[in-house]
Image 1 (cartoon, rainbow, N blue to C red):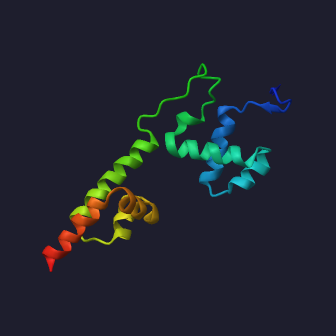
Image 2 (cartoon, rainbow, N blue to C red):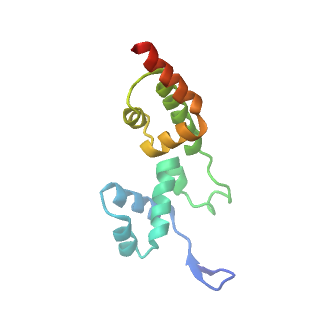
Length: 137
């Protein structure tokens, strides 16, 4: 079913089964470019579906037009999950002399992003860690 937008471009709606097939192919190790080419889809759309699936699960694959135009609500948003991981990593950073890389790895954070946030927004954590070094030696 093709429809026209205000710009005159045509688009078609994608079924749940089509989106589900994209995810299954991706789980089998097929690249998003190959999936897009074989299913005649745009590569950016395939990557967006994969991102939504990782963030919200299967419910994100359901097209919005099927669910009365409402976006499915996740139990935990990816943003709040990341904030929670940052909070725990900050606590570990301030209370131990464990290397920054291993803390970031344990809480599934990017090393550079974590280090940047500590230096930019939480200098008090650096001071707490320095006090630990002085006490230990």
